[in-house]
Image 1 (tube, rainbow over the protein chains, first blue to last red):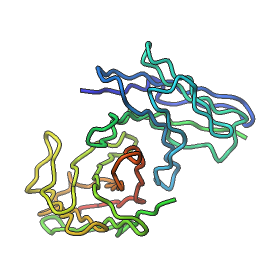
Image 2: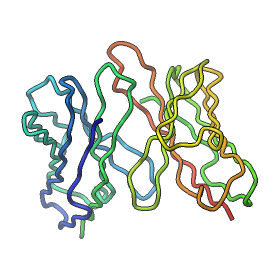
Image 3: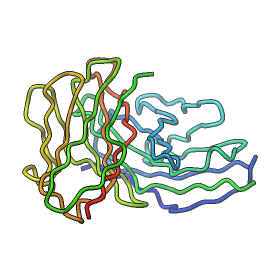
Image 4: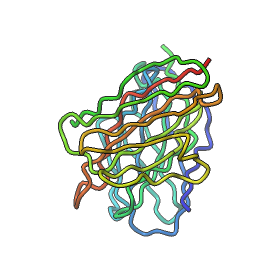
Length: 115
Length: 118
């Protein structure tokens, strides 16, 4: 079975700072996807960034980037120039490629951006 | 992007009654839909996977007679919480995917339903 672990229950930074959220996972699969989802107070799940395991290049989406270390089974999210609107719960998630498309979520990290 | 509509957004019911939650894919055909449950300040836990025209597959520990799932069309899945009790109070979220080659990882989430059982 796959597991996803987020070891930081809460984080807080000042606006414009850079923050990194950590995520580790455990799997015996070789082909899979990793995701970071944002859940703001509205509770709508929003996809932040996606990484295919077969790609060595780290995914980036504007201010969001990941550090994907496949051998270490680590998938951290870096938010640059943080904004007040980045305040949310962030979930790391795993999906097997070609499987039942089930997402396995980590416990979440509550990120607060302070003005 | 694709839109998944979930209704109602909030429902309050009396203990012992049944509640139906709908999840609709508005601009694509969802071959597979997923139902998650989220307790306050906790993560999302997958309850079941529903495929159009077939019986849902429930995760271990989820009572299929308590949480009835129907996926009768390619755009609609419903979750019925039967004989609801206060411990069923939770936030329920659906997600949907078109499935198929090259689209495996594209999941779209509904906005969730907060169920409160009195």
